[in-house]
Image 1: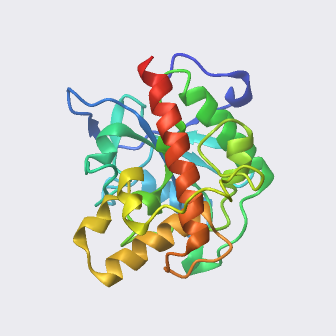
Image 2 (image 1 turned 90 degrees about the vertical axis):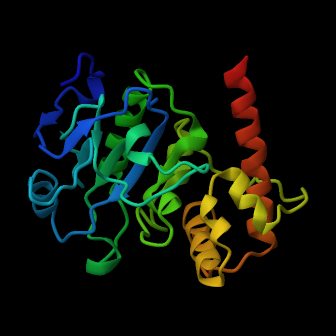
Length: 248
């Protein structure tokens, strides 16, 4: 399935899923999407992700003890995002690598992600980025791209720990633009949350909650406030710097 594997994940377990197809000819893999399984056990999740009748999959599944299961080859399109959108594009499965984290989720007793699981995730993402050019601003939660349907990986996911390892964007407390001008709610679309175009109150609140789960998880109320605006300002500036570097 894979030609190269870093030492940290040399014990990768191959458990093929039939639920995949070819990526479109012009598709560029430029996104990593993080999910939780939302099922009672990892065994149940693995069975579902490899069941042809379920028609759902991901490229990888990481157990709570850190074991990594490779389900779909990275060059193939796994079926994990569903109805989704980011930066005005809806072909998320075509451009993303999907990683499922075993966690019962909000329906079955949501709990923190163990250190061993996050350590394995960091090693896996670092390995993936050796093969695919994925910017920090496109390492996202399932909820980011599907805010009307999904909450995962949720407010307990340690985005700050990933950022400390050089993965993703996280406005650190000493660097989150506390003195900058707050960005307006409408600027969420510029960052990538395109669902605001629908314009209704319920959709807007769902998008704000998705943003808060990822970037302000200690208060998720669906209301745009000054703190959200300042954190978004930091994120927009970080995204602009990253995109500028990529064009050099």
